[in-house]
Image (cartoon, rainbow, N blue to C red; front, side, top):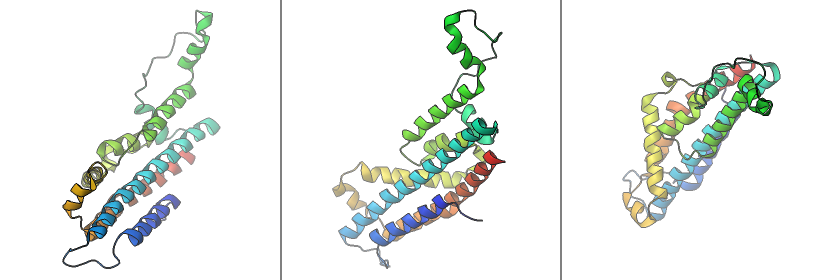
Amino acid sequence: MNRSEKYRCLVKELYVLRCHLLPLEFDPTGDYAPEILTRASMFRVLAHAEIESYIEERSWEIAVTAVNSWKGKRKTSRTLLGLLAFSDLKMEKPPNSLRPKKANSQSSWKNKLDISTKINQAMDIYHKAIENNHGIKEEHLLRLLLPIGFEANDLDPVWVADMSSFGEGRGKIVHTSASKWAKQQLDPKNELKIVKSLLRNGVRFLDNKMEDLLLDTYL
């Protein structure tokens, strides 16, 4: 299956990081100089940032496309339903009349009648969720993916756990002094293996699913 342009860019950026930060050949004994271990730590931090950015950008692309399809041709989609369902907006019953009893309530009354207003509100909430996102752990993945149409069964629990573990490892690096995390002796070979596994066992599937959701917003 063809991968999206954003996925291909992600793979390219991760390859560049691999070339710049990890040894061309790995030591079979795992004995590396301190500067190599520092680069391995930076590889984890920057690889995490690339994966996080990919998920955020693709998720927002799908949300925007779904809302634009609604505005342009009143096209409903799983993404549109997801944005509303997970927005935390109050789902009010229809009002009893087209016009409010009080003239000064005209603006707020229109909001009760207009579906597009509720969609725009849900979109604003989702935009804030992306802006305030700072990770790829389970809570972050659910907050970004469920509102664009993913279902719980679409996410492999093992892969989600691996993403959470990778995110926790990144957190320890950026929130710990270099003198302390350098002693953890990160294995450059293992760091590359983890990133490849995250792509192969989950991110590629996300990309396929996102392409399906994007197509659903058009057809």
